[in-house]
Amino acid sequence: MAEQSKNISYEKGDVSLYTIVTDILRNWLAICLIMVTVGMLTYVYLHVNYHPTYTTKATMVITRTGVDNNVYGNLRSAASSAERFAQLLNSSAMQKVVAKDLDIPAFNGSCSARNLENSNLLELTVTADSPGMAFHEMKSILRNYKTFSEDLLGDINLIMLQSPAVPENPGNPISDIKRILQIMAMAGAAVIAGLGLLSYLRDTVRTPADVEQKLDTHILATLYHEQKYRNIFSRIRNWRRKTSILITDPVTSFRYTESVKRMAARIVSRMNSRKAKVLMLTSVLENEGKSTVAANIALAIADEGRKVLLVDADLRKPSLYKILKMQDQEFVSLTKVLRAEDPADIRQEDLCVPVPGTALKAVLNRTGAPQSMEMFSSSRFVELLDIFRREYDYIIVDTPPMQLVADAEEMAPVADACAMVIRQHTVEARDINDALDALNGNKDHVIGCIFNNVHSGLPLPGSGRGYGYGYGYGNYGYGGHYGKTS
Image (cartoon, rainbow, N blue to C red; front, side, top):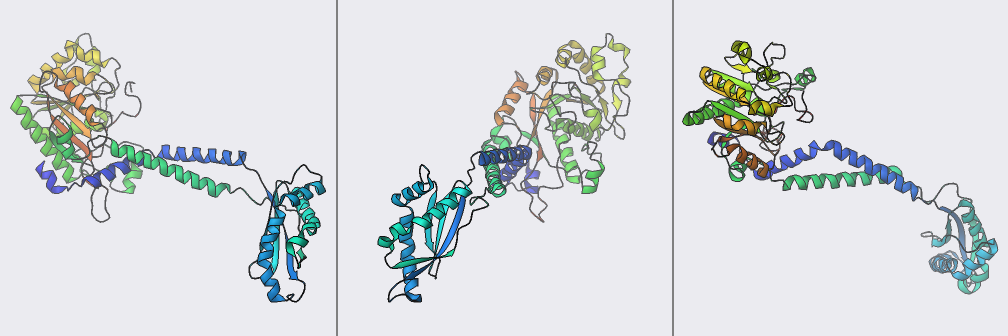
């Protein structure tokens, strides 16, 4: 569409980034649940595998005998003495002496010695699995180190400065919160990266150019995203009720209204070239916006002075009576006519009700019918359409999604033309093509597709991109399993 291309500049990378971010945000609950689960498992793992250790320390002053017994001599000796003393502590001979002294099978723990920087102080540490063992092993080392120190330390004297004490707390406290948060963040990042990759690899329709390149049909119109709520106050006021987007609503943007009118004119032109009166609208999946699109097409054509009838043939999940804001209006449901023993008893004016404030008439439903396919395969629906053909210029029929039930495929042969509503980045291209092939059958039924709820990319501050125009999906009745009646 040339006029659309002039208004919106599509950048493939920008649109891809938007669809990736959308897919990630759509799964925010799953991401949070995975992160919480990983955090809980990490907590359990850390506590199950946690082994506390206890460390006790002793500080000694290094001095020398002889002529070098001065501050400078003591400082020069400190570093070398620490290294030699560490060798002594970790020697098998020393550990055997300690084990014998404490009457234990073997030395339990580890020892170290270090020179405190720029001083002649030597710090000894012993780490063991219990506070008492660490303390007793340190005391045993202090009692027995002189047995080995004469050959190893020479003229070095060690004077106790700070005696060891029984440690009260583990020397390796488990850092639950920080470690768990780090692992949760890494798990969340991994899930987000995985979702982003899967989104990028999906072969969906992201831009109008993708429609022409990937699908076996032509594009009738591109309807851009339309915000249903203009501000936070309107969102709060309407949070309990669903809001439809209709071109007759004064709050609907001018851009969206004009897009629908151009689309309706294009559809009328194609139908006239085929001498068609009945247009069937469907989609591959639910929540692609086909019911709202059908209502707006019918309203736009009726606004041009033509006699138009909108038929809600989505008998499983009827929604047009809500979209047209006719919840409180009395009407005869289409399911009642199709089930009636003698349809002649039902007056046409009771079945085809006017839509308030418009020139449009509609055949509506209020409750679902699980055996809807049997109704469409009967001759009664065909007879009903033949009656409508004589009374109206155009008949717009809203049908169920194709991938969920077979109603639309069963109904396609009785329609003069079909159009597919495709929501941006929702259905795989191969699934759309399969649905198009099923609709076409032996006839060239499909006149094109409506590319719906399209975002041009991530909105940039001050640019206005991605906001305020187009289509925001407003389908009603599709919240659970489609096969269930409402």
